[in-house]
Length: 248
Length: 165
Image 1: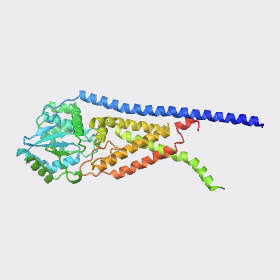
Image 2: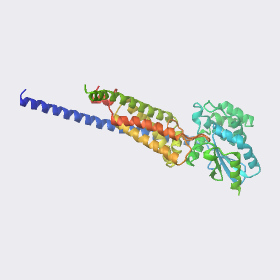
Image 3: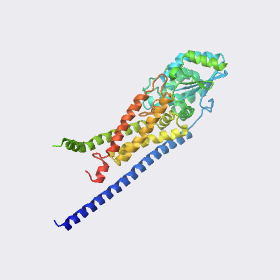
Image 4: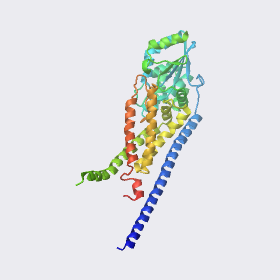
């Protein structure tokens, strides 16, 4: 091959290489654009889905007329020290707290020392195989409060607490338990079957989160969260001491 | 005869396969992480809020966007589109997650990281497992690192577009 011919073939090779490099650059640019667009679109989708869900549930919101604290709790007792209890009906540690300190609380209420505000929250919906027991139980408790028997129903729900990661209690069972404490009206049964207060349970849970609480039970005495060492469940003695201290 | 050269040649053929495994592994990580959260966006928002790093309203938005973002990133890695960029974004997300866990740990918060669940809240008496969560995320970060350095993989859209396969 002549020198000229070699030069020409080398030039051709260089041009081809440049073309290939240009093509790769273009592909990289377009794939980058596609990736960025896909990610932005997916983030916006999440936002839109959430906004849609919350406006839907806001439309369905029925706040029980007897609820206090911005319509998110039910008060028991009229004592000077306010005790806020945030509980999920599916939560076993809440059950433990009720077993451990339920009697103390009842005593404090009847001695007119405390006002207990029960905040039903639904953070454990994932633990009932999709039946959303936490939400249904909180909604049923609201219906019980409307029927004037919140604390009776609250207690019977804990006495019959289903295992975590079971289906939870059926609506029929929730209605039956209501009957056992004197909630025999059709209004109570209808509220459970029609999910009247389910959106409200979501609002209570939102309020709980907005206040910076993350777990149940959250026990707040006179505005101060009470826990045992390392964030554990406070013993009955710790809880009682907090109430005594708040009473001054 | 030159064993160094042979070794290099072997690695040149091996890297795309190693990277492919890393790519599919990282894709699975993001798809599973997003998939477990996407069914309950409110819970995902609460999990973000549990870190106490932003106001609740902002946490709700982040918590809603995050699962979708994770799934999208998982799909991009699965098909192998712009692998280096996707892996880079994944690495940034992982660094943010790790920083979040470290900050929760440092502040003594008692939370579940909410990495592969709606998590967030931890029952009283349950002990957080921050150390393990960080180690696990560092493992995922290593996968992303492999792809950042060696983004060429088998059976990828990138390969198809570049005419490599």
